[in-house]
View 1 (tube, helix red, strand yellow):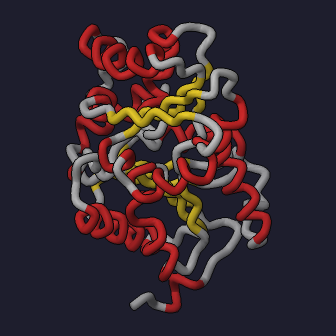
View 2 (cartoon, one colour; view 1 turned 45 degrees about the vertical axis):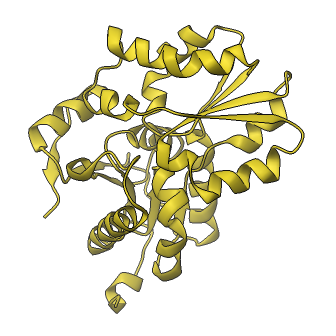
Length: 271
């Protein structure tokens, strides 16, 4: 049962962002770019990552636990920066959350609108690929095109280890991208927030003529719209702050987060 203190929000309160691990930093990065005065809290559930092959009940339990933790920190909105959580658990989260929830999902619609070959590829986790939500997106926007769904086991773990340019990572990317190219895909959707950190290597493997779509910018724009609609946008003129938390190894996650964020940060443990 949520207490009434959760229902009190103000313009100065932070925005909570979470993912199964560090991948959602790609979304946080875009939020910071578009909303420079907002205070942000990021939670990496690295102690339980990856989610890609986990059961629905497990993912729902973890998402609920993190959402409650963020509400304890008095966030005014939450961003689900994890495609797997979106397709599995966001409906349940929204059913009880007292604050707006903005979620990310594979950008099949924009890909369908821009493809010239009529064939698009979606790189995502096994759980995301198998979800009813992705099936729904394919039915809604893929009636006149071919949508190739490519599960990518192992890529999340590479990013969690900050192995962004290693030989093994390039080999994985090649193995997942090549079948899409062979079938004529000219547009590739990054259906996991970890994958933008592999964006350069994905583009190199795919080739310069292939369009790569990262939905993070759209999520940040939707967050801004919802903050405005609820009249809870920051009214401060000062630069916003970031706080980072993890359920995993603080030492490791702090190192990886600092690497991906581009500067040294402090990461605290989720109690």
